Length: 111
Image (cartoon, rainbow, N blue to C red):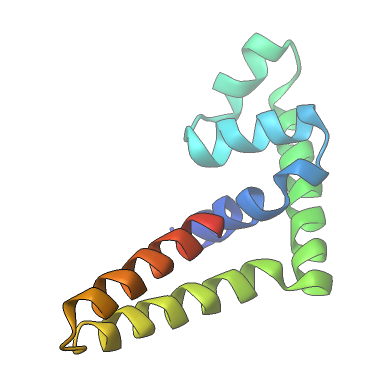
């Protein structure tokens, strides 16, 4: 499960760097949870070809993350925003608390 979540996150971060074919197969496998056979049949390729594409694309995504660390940084930023939100709950001035909550919400949408 953790491995699957990791690749969903990496796909979200780096999916635009993949070919459309690679991305489609990865989304079908990791996001839609389809089997190799369910992916291969409509595409007219073998299950082994699907598996090969998935493995090569996994390596590619891991390589991107190793070099760029974008997914790691996004995760850390989300934790920081959660911490800021928790601290903001203790602000007694409602206007300031609401303004800060709105800014945090807008920032999280950018992630």
